[in-house]
Picture 1 (spheres, one colour):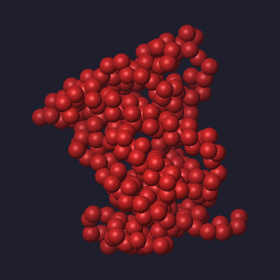
Picture 2 (spheres, one colour):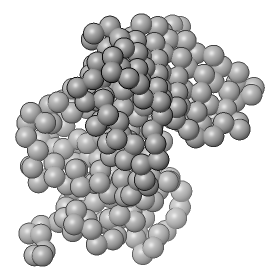
Picture 3 (cartoon, one colour):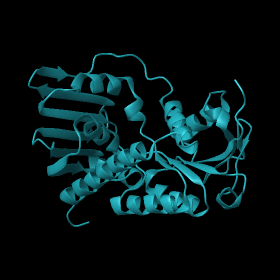
Picture 4 (cartoon, one colour):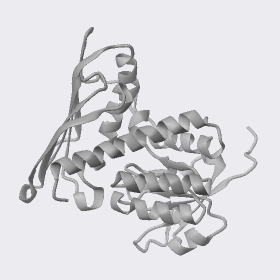
Length: 295
């Protein structure tokens, strides 16, 4: 294979779980990584260097001509600010979901990206999972009567990761990607802060008025798990069989981002993706308002 004509200089902002995976992918010889050149990372902690990659200041990352791309892998509450700074500095941006914790902010950032002629990409590795590929095949051409999706996990700090409808937006994205745009019927939040327990229960409906229930339940001792049940006119689907291990889902997401950098997606595909992302963020915000009317 010929080496690519040019490489885009990349900086990774935030080196937690996702940031570390991103750095590893950038340093390994993958086809999409060949178009990218990892220049450094930005972190609030003083780390010096990681595996030979230098830490650089946010200021240097923003002002460096070498840096053309930023991967935003920080806590969700800081995404909006970082995206804005990097777009304003004329850089392309890949951000881990959720891109923002408000739908107005997301709209503003898409406008900014378009104005600057830069790629703004929100990661959705959940759409690259084997289970999702299985579900997508299963639901094709079927009429949904009703469905439910329950996600359980350990506690998560809302201050850092946002309201549960935002921190759990990958589940909402599954439902929208499987059944089309949804509307909100009702939403409630049960919380026991002293026990680090929370349960968000959401009733949605499809454009054909089929009900979908989405529940996020988090607390100590709850294992990370997804329970789903979809009833169709032609039978039902309870949970996903073991469909194999998810391999390199962050790398697959990077491949999509690189295709965008290289202009390989049609305007139509990009517009459909943006519409879905904004629809999900809009729903998440509506759910939050239902659950916390005073905020």
